[in-house]
Image (cartoon, rainbow, N blue to C red):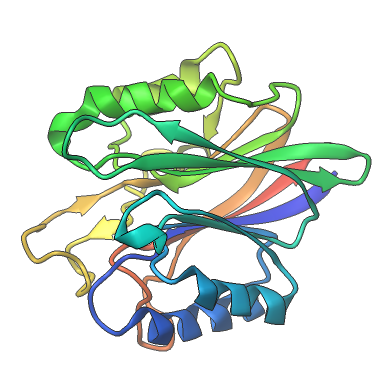
Length: 247
């Protein structure tokens, strides 16, 4: 078995500049030593490139097509990256483009898939998010590879998009937070107490997820970046999971 520590975090947020917030993020990376970090809404990927070089990670950036391609998905991996791909997700007119980033990393003589995505936002878009998940699952996934699926899914746990990840027939996935914590804790990552959050939002929502396939065992998962040295890095909190992969 190989231990993999995986983090997922949406980097968007008001407050200090992204450069200032990434100083906090880099400090956390140094101390926590994740193997894979899935980031969404990354506004200045060149800043992440510096972090990757300093800390020994490979960086895979997938621009989504907004902000003159200076945003998008970014995945940091200190596990060797063997293949990369991206999938354009369906959206309706007037919505921001969305993609999924697919990595295949090498674990000894075997491989593991890592998916990083950011689904469309809006309570009225539940069917669209379901369609986006179906698009990802029907893409270049290798069902025999162990798989970690991370991202800001903008979906509550009861939505069809989450059920589809769990119940699909291609690669059924397990929600690691629910597996480790059950109903005892809400797992909210988009919370009114975060001062970087849009002030119109006055509740707590679970939007961010890490899923695993059946050949991966979960050992722990925690919410991170609630504060770090009395500062936050985003309007989202992150997730940090410890997993074991059969190799």
